[in-house]
Image (cartoon, rainbow, N blue to C red; front, top):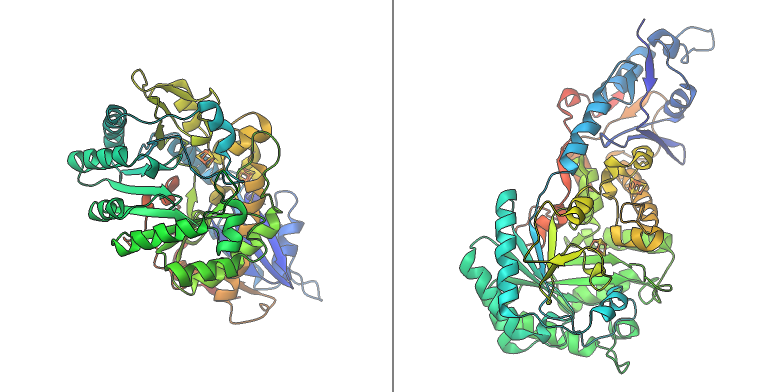
Length: 512
Ligand code: SF4
Ligand code: SF4
């Protein structure tokens, strides 16, 4: 007799009489009544089909005729498995392999380490202070871009170069030189500029629009919110200048997005801050950044992560009805909806290089100035020990993550924050771990709300959402929109789709 056991990747969620079994590797959900939870919780050791069916006895002691079909459905969807099954072990081995592949597609170029603002929550102020004020020379930009083109041509995917700082527009000549160099050497490279918006001129805006540079301006809400954190050295708020810069960019014809940092200045109240920004600036997309930790002391904008995540969810439910894309959030939502495991969260884990003004190359901006993980560009090679350490970071490679419900959507969080917390880039970023699990639970019940026709399920009813039903979570957002910025960046680390072909034919709703 073949023995059957429950998969260790199945997690049970309960809410108001409803039950969801969630398979954390396969990214599948089965919704049912309390019967589903009782069956699963009773399976403490491997049993035969007959023994399991014995859990479904009626008041006369007879096994219910619906039991076998019920168990078979759980077997087909891999929530139950035969003892000799190696499906999950094989899947982890494949994902492990995928996670270690080089996939270099992103370059951060830092024209200058100087910034005219002193945002109170900025996590790189600490480390970049040691780096000092340095400006990039044109030949450094060329050498960095050239090296990046070589590496990214091996990967073959969509290349993206981002200007980052410091404030990149404090070095306008370098920006223009580098953009010209990119456009002259590659006709398929996307270019993005991160800016605080305060130093935008008409000529620069026109230049960026003419060269199809997507511009992302940092804005945290209306002036009274924004100015609490985003200030000049003398403490003056930067909103007015940022808004003026945004308007110039828009009038010049630039495609524009807004990057918003969430903290105690806009939480609670995130939704109204975002509503204001949408009405005032009409951005194509929003980035919702969770605060990073400060190396020394706490972040002055720190806010409870549960409250922050709940506000972020609330805001997402609002903007999805407007069809506005939300970067960062989609890094969690898309893997859940498309059933495509996210192997990595941050492209620094094998996919991104940063070239700094002093002609050094590294992976994460926050480490610049720490003396760690930066190397002379001239002698850098892909066999570099640091590169291989970053490339190897992925939750599927960590024993403790294999038991975590959020393993398929989290990507492992931020290695820099893990380093600040635990002194090791390969440790857990516990703040984002908590956030990913809160988001997962919300996704599970949001999906249920979309697919159930209301209320609880009948005792024997099982509901298995299909692809189209999962996509209802997007609402009016078109995730295939080519106008969106950072498309490749946002999808970095999303592994191949999990093959659900073998049980695609199953009914979405089973009334056994
Ligand atoms: S590890 Fe990635 S997410 Fe974290 S600070 Fe560095 S670049 Fe940003
Ligand atoms: S949320 Fe944290 S514990 Fe869970 S898989 Fe991701 S990194 Fe690991």
